[in-house]
Length: 141
Image: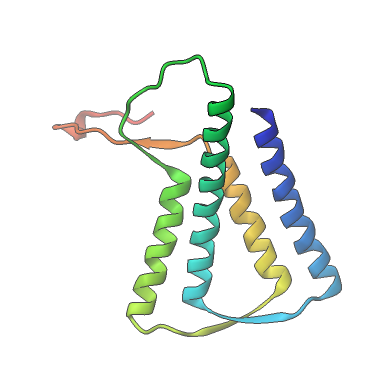
């Protein structure tokens, strides 16, 4: 499904273009709390993965893949990072940390572009979860 990858790249290019234009025009300064930054970053990563997964489900329904599905216990890196960012937001809010940060629009848009790029680059990476009784004997490649 090259159209999906091309679409993701185009959205990433749009994020970077908006950040560059905002930096050139010296856009507004936004006042955000630190927990809002973590929450927004987590939501962006999780939403990107969700949209990609929905597009893949629709595409597989229209043109089913010939390969048989595989079963494995794994965790998507993109979703893990998004969930971790949301958890950091919850911990910061629970601790009462509501410090404000003044960020330019270019900084916020650059952060969004960087997160989108991270999500795109890690879209096919998973951490395999398995039980290994004597994990000290495992060599990491």
